[in-house]
Amino acid sequence: MTRIQSRRTQQRLALSTYVKLMRAANSARSYASRSLSGANLTLTQFAVLEALYHLGPMSLSDVARKVLTTGGNLTMVVGNLEKLGLARRQSCPEDKRVLIVTLTAKGKTLLRDIFPRHAAAIVEFLSVLGPEEQERLGDLCRKLGKQPKFSV
Image 1 (cartoon, rainbow, N blue to C red):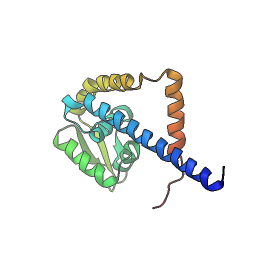
Image 2 (cartoon, rainbow, N blue to C red):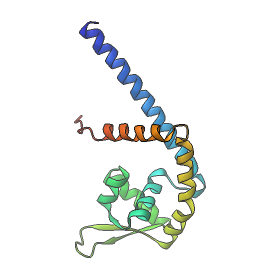
Image 3 (cartoon, rainbow, N blue to C red):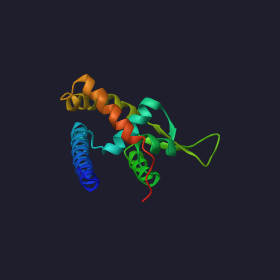
Image 4 (cartoon, rainbow, N blue to C red):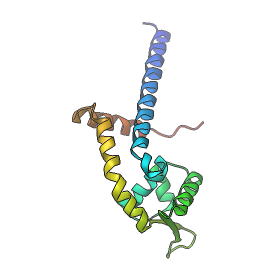
């Protein structure tokens, strides 16, 4: 096989794998969204609430890192959660420039109600893979996620 054929084969494999990865990610996102349908929350809103529920109050920048979103988007998401009475922003006592996001009692109650259903949906979605396959997929995804950031 020539070097050009080898590059083309490599390219075809990479593109095919990428399409499969994106389709799987879209299926997972769709499945997860359906589990939240009765709660009238977006996946990002749920992710913020879930992070606060399990990790406690955090700064906006920490929440953004945890839920893999931008600061600008997170500001809008948290603002919408505040309007729904599920979260609130407050100044950090140590540094007034930093905003801390906390769950309200209503937010905690909602998460206690919907998290088990959401977790069950994720378990169901991934049940087509055995435990070893899920471990392997998790390892491969972590490996892909730890690549150096590419500049565009």
